[in-house]
Length: 434
Image (cartoon, rainbow, N blue to C red; front, side):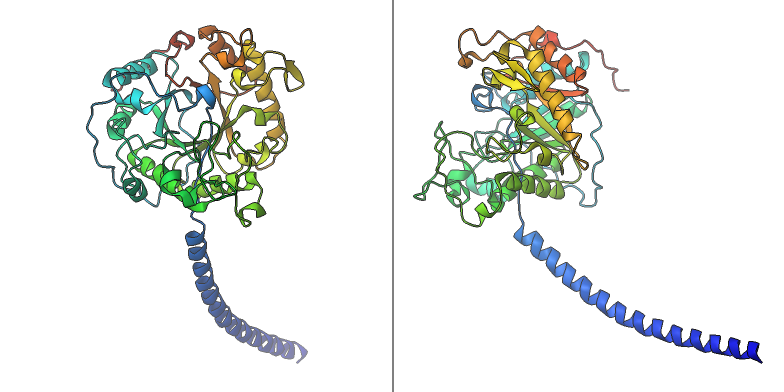
């Protein structure tokens, strides 16, 4: 009897429990449905409100993109319409397909058939396997006929090259193409849209020492403008997007007018949020950012430009520190080593910068970005007589070796005029495609 009673009570308890679970499940389904609607509304709101963009900064003063290639014959190719937009369901990229050994090329350079063929031949016969090509340079122009509505409306494109022709030619030769987008240094769109620009305290356009106006890195609509340009480039077939002048201005009058809402966040927070937004909007290709070389040594955001080493690489695939020896101050200490004349010691400056970089980011548990440094192949007479040297193949090779000795594998060589010392690159005959 006791056993039968126990079984009976057990069955009753199970029935009661089942009913309770059924009722709870129905109620839970109702809550989940309501929650999904609320989450969708919130996501759409955030998407509409947070239309951000990305930027970077790799090349300053005489070494920046303001000096275009000196060739007299820019591309005569006709421009085609951009290709259809990319498939929206592409999975986020895990890693680039190459260990980049790259050169920077202007739009004018790749636009000329002869020079384009020259650089294809260089990639087919040496270790060079990648090129950084301007999409939007710091003159503010997209280098081909963009169909981005804001670019069309403001007339901020110039026929420097045919992107479809260039990408096809490079890809046919297994060359990895990194598209460079200059973000906040923009003397065109900042004038067309002064509401998006950095202002003076009196409300006028703020300008740097070269009388160039900048887009406001706090302004999310300025972010969106640059990201739209980058997304169109990815749809065309660029393999990676690299943001340059990804910072606040470093020269000119410091009296810049930002809104109270802007000043509620640090400059580096605005830059990092832009990069996070860009990566979210462009998940299908690697995203990289050019940064000052000195931030590898300087703690936090000492330069006040919004570049903080420990944070700037947490959401993107690469940072490219410009460890140009000529860009370090006389007597600069790097990794506890003093360099009286940095331009005269290319190996030491690059090696110690990257060793310090590796030590710092090794302490950041979720650091995502790899390091792909910009190296110097230009002369720097502005640092003063006796403080610089003529750069040639030997100096370029010293920097490349420093990258390897510091434990990194990738690099990009910069010369604004694209006049490279090509004997610095190891010979490597590539196999022809079947």
